[in-house]
Length: 67
Image (cartoon, rainbow, N blue to C red; front, top):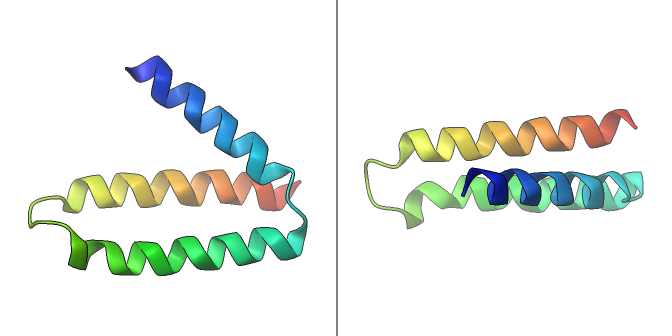
């Protein structure tokens, strides 16, 4: 399962890196909005999962913005 998650992470990072700066900003804005709405949609007790997801998304998009 870990290999599948890591493969998907690499794929998503590659796709995000290929976006133009405007499209990347649009995508990051959409992700931010979804993350803000996420806690309301999940049951209590998933805060650690949400934090992990948010950290991974932030890391991937930060790498894409550097290129």
